[in-house]
Length: 302
Length: 275
Image: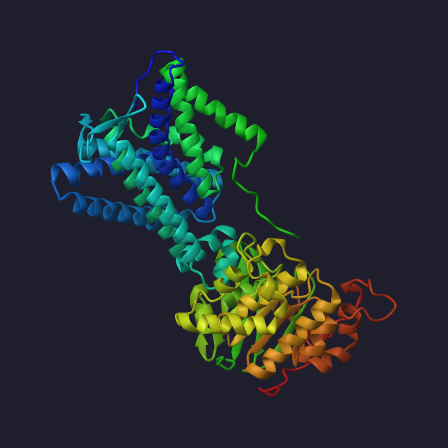
């Protein structure tokens, strides 16, 4: 999809091209996986609606940046603000009532949210597919016989920036500390005066904002924006699992690894091999290390 | 710099989980600056009592059916746990419940979650490290890897970070070496005397708790079975039999012991509010 290489070849420039394409795709997976992991780690919810969140972001990007034709930075600001509000709505409207319910009941709720988002997008945006976004610089340059698009570089840089911000946030802010405390032990956190409700709300808001960024980026590299782009959620799932569902850093590495593997499978074996290979990698990792490469079981000495 | 103790008054407290009654008409008073212990075997309702005071019942699908809980004359019943911590109640939970993946320092800082005076938090951290100097070299260690005794020190220190006027310790002695438990109880007494913090200790280890507390209650099957000064309860043959391992028949069943009629041997005793 990103780069269609059907020919099997050992030409180094082709492999370089695949590597570059894989890293760009992997960066997007990483953003999606980060959203998965953030919610899973903090609230214990496996959010199967994350692909839809991202699709919501892409459609809102269409609205604010194309239809309303806002200034780019203002448009992005409004986009992320709206996503944040939607995240709060997901928590206060739905997920809050599910706290303490069974794991699978909550997973099913997220599938329900996914369905609702798809339906609402159909109602408000119609079935017609839209062209991809073209707000980021569209040029490209050559390096070692491979073409590097400016968009890919920007995607990579934005994702790296987000990851850095997240890391600093969790390590050095009070709210970040409280989020990690709730992830470790919700009852102990509540007993210390941390409000789990507030932490959960912030988690959903942050996940939505991440999905907004992801949607904006993915909208630039997808063939078209339609209601099938939510599949990115499923495709990024191996990335999250490979990294370990509880490791933010792992989700980044997992995203890049799976992106590159997919591109090589795509380039050397053909498009139809892309997803089987990605999921096979996930299975192998799970067989060898059930918690993913960087996931951890809770440390506890009794 | 710590707020002095606030009077905790619990009256007629009845708590249910689903259809099961865990506490029945419980009346307990922790006077301002007092040191009170609640004794009881497993299943007596001790932890339910802690959850009721600290607003955590909802996490276990429990609810208060009747009764009142007042701190310094103000009802804290139905308040959310963060508000109760802000009101001055801190706890050392049963089983310590540290955040295992966080460092010791981060654990301690989480105890200050309710505070808005950011600059004062560092002072409290220092104060805690003076109280538990063993923790100083462990500050950047992952809490889950500490020994049980070290973990319990972190748990007590974490609770103190909120500068409580009432400190509740649930089963402080559980699974710890007697020497460490002794030291922890000495520290509690010191905190009680020097800072005026009220202390409520929920214990199975009756002998130690009765040595340090001024007043004591015995909880059994959700009811207050006895209450009185710690000295009185120490001398009581039934308490000795059941909780102090006295007599040659330490394993006598509850049923075999003659109960005072009405379940209470003493009337409520008023004890001094200072200690």
